[in-house]
Length: 296
Image (cartoon, rainbow, N blue to C red; front, side):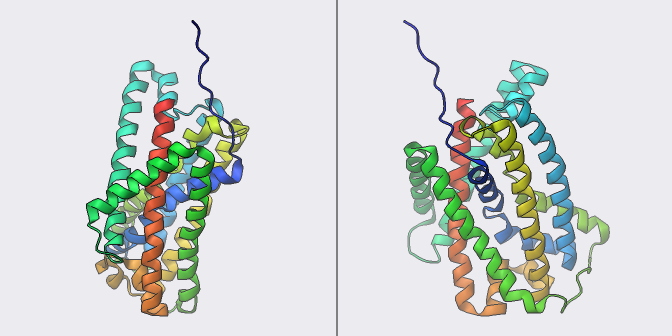
């Protein structure tokens, strides 16, 4: 008896793929990591974002080229297999799967932490619930998963746009090149901020569900990096203009603090609510791309 190989349905276009990548990149990173980075880079933290964006762009160009050559759901393990053989690809594949699952679990804990500010649900219970809900959405289908991801990505981006609007009048009111640890601190901040760009490589796992993947996947990778980089740099400039970088470095929720300083307590709570969707979105897409990588 012969069996027919499973073929994934090509239901995704350029913009749905791009926005899903932006959703993974934005995730929860910028909502927390900017404070820690400011402790290293000072008010020049925006330059750290520029450095990280440059590195992400160069890495993204490599992924774009490889994705156009090998448009398969396995993504990076497939590239390694083509270059170094099946054993290397097999090892990297399991490592990438482990990273995706662990990242989803970590972000889910972050979701539970934000949820604790709105309800009395224990952190671990909230994390488990968001993972189970993510799995249910993924099983439903790629179209439903990406539609929900796109909606939450737009919500995440709206949170950053709120920061830009609230702090627009403060831009230029404080020095933007204070570097307490010099160039070393700037580079350290850049290395840390690069984490906020993690996720663009996950776009390649959607290759077998995207129409014309050799054209659309490379474009989606580069568009996601550029779009996220512009938002990150503008938000970081606004943040250190509205709030002293020393204060940002001490805060556990720096963007919420920026919103509260510039607009009042109501905006801080709004940003915390948006962070819930940001963490949910990242957990959802990490599990969704892990499933495609396993298939690949």
